[in-house]
Length: 214
Image (cartoon, rainbow, N blue to C red; front, side):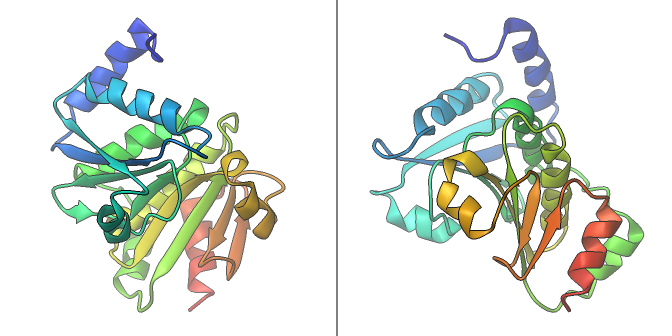
């Protein structure tokens, strides 16, 4: 049974066919002890069937250790979109369902080479960045504000090789949600606990917080 309705599939197909380049979608999965690996795989296969602009690459997390190591994937399900510029540091941990489906489509656009459309001040900050930044945005599929924060993080990562950004579905990784005290979403964890941002904030607020860490 298709996960997307016929109407939604047509809209998504138009978006995918309009991508400026082909995107390899690396999907890491495993048979056991993975709550939503099967459903995530079904979703990605359905999307790949809609357009030649998506090339799905499936990896067994336990068997394909070289690929997991190359992309720094430590848990599943994981999605890594890779475009003509290579790996931009965009990651999904957990199924991008519900509102997060919009984040998935946006990641394909960025990986394909779309302009992140950042403010000049943000570009200046990124150009002078001397250290690496890791942004993990904790979300749930029913949170309408979460995709905005995920996309904020993804745009920074797409614009700078020193920034990595991940969507983490909080209910699928409760040990991490407990570690980082995720009581509401979105919650953005910076450098694995060096700093936090609560809720959806403007790009300028995100950059101000990152600047304070320098």
